[in-house]
Amino acid sequence: MSSNKPHYEAECDEIVKRDSQRWTFRPRGFNIIWGHDERYWNLPKKGTDDPAELVQVCWLELTGTTKDSLPDGKYEIKFKLEVKPGAFGLSNSPIFMMAKVGKRGRYKWNKIKLQEKNSDNRTVTVEPTFQIEVKGSTDDNKLYFGLYEVWTGKWKGGLLIHKATVDPVGP
Image 1: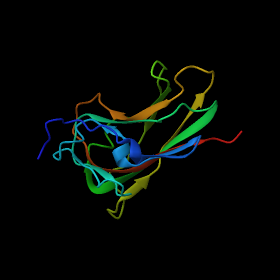
Image 2: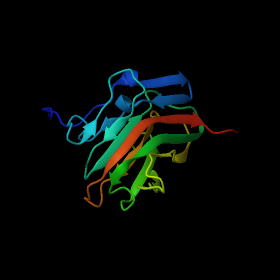
Image 3: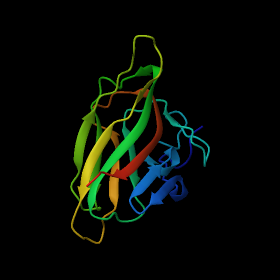
Image 4: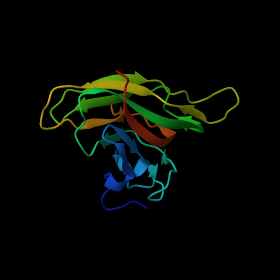
């Protein structure tokens, strides 16, 4: 059953601030295009560590934002993803991790490769990472990031999103 509001908006309490520089985003801590429509996404119950399941979409857009500005430094964004047996459209689609500092910042991006099948037809876990530097003091040093595949219009499904973390990278 679909909702009257098809896009899912992040729940702030599903974004865990571990300290001033470390964040964990559970699946309900993301903004998810078509996330309220069960034909496209299965979202976990609130407060659990269960993954969100991408059932099928032709427009993948899953975004997160730190609640507060980050201090200067280099940060690593890491997603924990699983590709389920029977997944489709993922290995042929250009999926990108993108991030920017501040609403007016410029996006930096990294293309990631997701494998749909392995030799024994089991779930494949991947943890793609991406680094971005926060420098200069502006009014908005929040980190805006996400997973995107919005260009091909091809259907894709069978992806589990467990979490994303934002952590400082050593000196």
